[in-house]
Structure formats: C-alpha cells, structure tokens
Image (cartoon, rainbow, N blue to C red; front, side):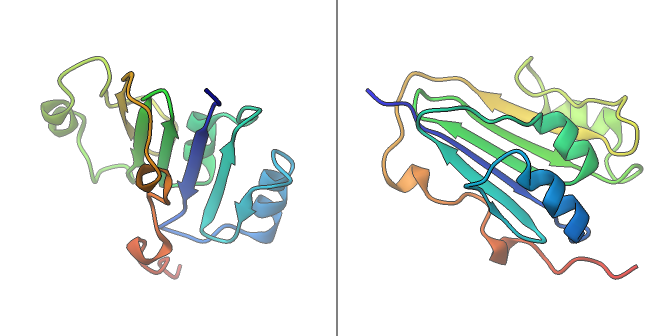
Length: 138
C-alpha cells in the first residue's frame, strides 16, 4: 500500500507577504503557495517544515491527514480571544491540549490516530479558500 499525506495551512487574519511566500517555497517546489495558503501532498516523501513553528509565524489553521488514519487540526487564536481554562473544557485528553506558552498566539491542536485508510473524498481540500474570511486591514 502506498503512503499518502496531505498538509494544508491557511492564513486568515492577514495575508502572507511575498517574502514569507518565498521563505515557504524553500520547503517545497511542488506546493501550492499563495497569500493565504500552503497546500501539499506527499506520496514518496515527507513534509520538511515544522507545523508548530509555521503556525506560530505564518498561519491560523492547519490540517494534516494521512492514509493510515492520522488526522490533525490545529487552530491559532489571537491572545485574549481564547482563554486557557475555556479551551481545556473542550480538550479532555492528550490528543487535544491547548498550548499556553506560545510567544504570541495560543494554539489548540486536535489529533486522531486511527487505522482506517482514507477514501477519495477524504483526500479533498479540508480548508477551502471560501471558508476563510478576507484578511483584516491593519
């Protein structure tokens, strides 16, 4: 059975700058990269970046899916919007824990590890551009 991994990151609060997109391009020549997204799938390799670091620096949402059943969703919130005690109410096991000590933004990762493979529909994009609102103007 071949391997399949899907990575998608989205910037919602602000668009990526041309410099940031160039930094991300160093990690993949095949990825789809624009001012709001980084999307790539792997069948014979692996992601070269660090999802947690990218969420701290560039993105607001992250989805990872592998055909062996692992799924991960990570959301980043501006400080003060999501209080740690509130997040803990929804994160009751080790697979879902808020991470309070990030420098700028708290992140909530949700993970599921399973054995079931993915069907064709499950391999489709999980964070479509239409789901993201327009970036705020600063």
